[in-house]
Length: 118
Image (cartoon, rainbow, N blue to C red):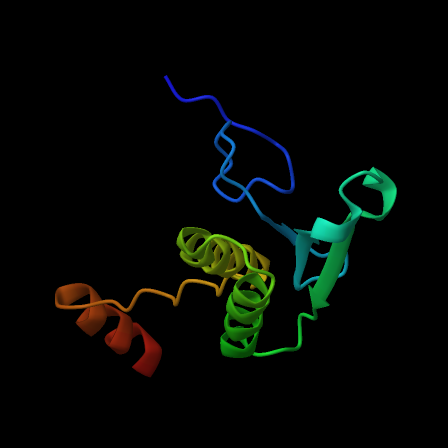
C-alpha cells in the first residue's frame, strides 16, 4: 500500500524523501518551490519561489522548470518528475472544450432532412 503526501515540496506525492516542489499558482500558472542550501538553519527564509504565469507557453514553463532544477544542483532524476508535475498542473488549468454535437446518420439523417424541407 502506498502512502501519499500533501507536502508542496513533494514531487511525486508519495510519502518518501525524494522531493523538490512544484505547485499551482494562485492566479493560474505554476510556482516552482526550491530550498536554498545556504539557509537550512532558518526555515522561514529557506524556500525560494519562482512563478511562471498562466500566459507563458508550456514549452517555456517546462524549460524554466528543468533549468532551475538543474542549476540549483537538485538530483537529475527529479528533473523529469518536476517537468511532468508542471505539465499536469498546466493541463488541469486549461478549460475543457464542449463535446461537438453528434450528427445524425443513415435513415435518421434522411428523416431530419425531409422534416427541414417541409
